[in-house]
Length: 199
Length: 213
Image (cartoon, rainbow over all chains, first blue to last red; front, side, top):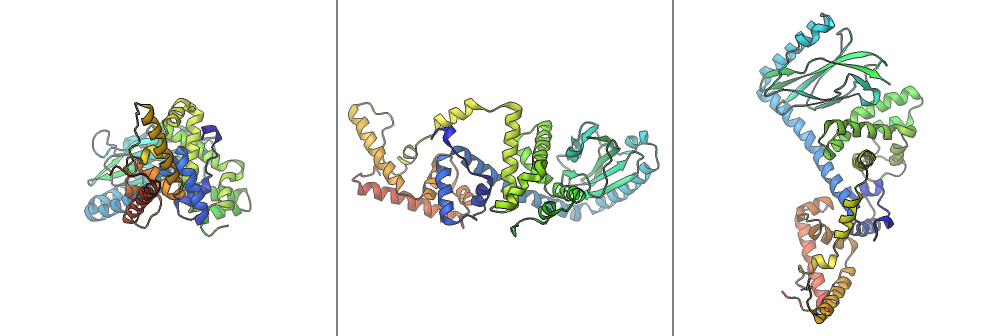
C-alpha cells in the first residue's frame, strides 16, 4: 500500500480500540488496518504508552504527599509558616523588594527552575505556570498582583498549574508569581517573576 | 451526550453565553493542561518547543467554538482522556510539521523498509525461506514457500496477524502486546501467540510443507 493511498484511522476509532470499546467486527476491521499501516500502529503504541504514564503521575503525587506527611512534617510546617511570613512581608513591601525577600536557593539540591512563562509578556492562552526541580517533594504556588497583594496561593505536588479560575485576568495587568518548594525539610524558592498579560 | 463525557466538557458545550463558556473553558484547561503538557513533553525536551506546542494545541481546541471537542461529544468512542491523548498527539505532530516540515525522506525510508509478514514469521514457524537464493531452483523454491506462507497467513484473523506484526516487526514483548490489546493477562497473549504459530505450522503441513523444526 503506497503511503498516499492510506486512509488512516480517525481519533475516535483509535481511542475506542485502545479502550477495548469497539464492537467485535469493527475491532477486526481496525486490526486489519493496523497490521498494514505502520503509522497508525506507531500512533497506537505511543498513545498507549502515554495513557499508561498518566496514572504514574498520579501515583507520584500520592507518594510525594505521603513522604511529606511522614518525613517532612517539621519541614512542611516550617514551610507553611514561612510561606505565611514571606507573603505577609511581601504584601507590606514595595515591589522592588519582593525578589530580595524571597529565600531563593540559587544552586544545588532543591533548586527550582522556571520552565514557563520565561518572558514577561504572556498571552492569555499561555497562562500556564510550569517549573522543574530534580529533588523537591512538594510545592507552593503563589500569585501576587502588581502591588504585592496575594491573589492566590496553593500547595501542589505537580510542576504545572494553570491560571487560577477565581482570579480575574486583566489585560495589560502586571502580576508576580513564584514557587516555593520543600526538599529534605529545606525551603527553596524562585524569585518573584513578573508577568504582563497581553492579547 | 455520552455518559463518559466529563462534566467540564458538558459545561463547555452547554454554556448559555460567552461568560459561561469562558468560565467552562478555564475549568477545562485547569483539568486537562497537565495532560496536554504531558503529551507535548513526550515529543520534545526543549522547553520553548513544548510551550509552543501547548499554545498551538490550546488554540486548536478552542477555535471554531471548540469544534474539535464537539467531535468527541458527537461520535466519541472510548474514554475522553484516551480520545484527548490521541487528539493532542496529532495536534503536536501537526505543530511539529508546521514548524519543521514533514520528514519525507524518513517516511519514505520507513515505507521502503516495511517487511512482509511472510519474511518475519518464516523462521519462527521453521520455514526456511532462503533469503539469498543463489540458484534458479532456490529462487523458485523460495517463491513457492513464500506464497504458501502468505496463504496460511491469510487464513488467520486480522487480530492474529496484528499480533504477529507487533511481535516480530515492531519488536514488542508479549506483555507489552497484552497491555496494548487489552488482553486479560500476558499469559493469555502467550497462549494466543503459541496457538497462532501452531495454526500456521499445521496449515503449512496441510499444504505439504514440512517445517525445518
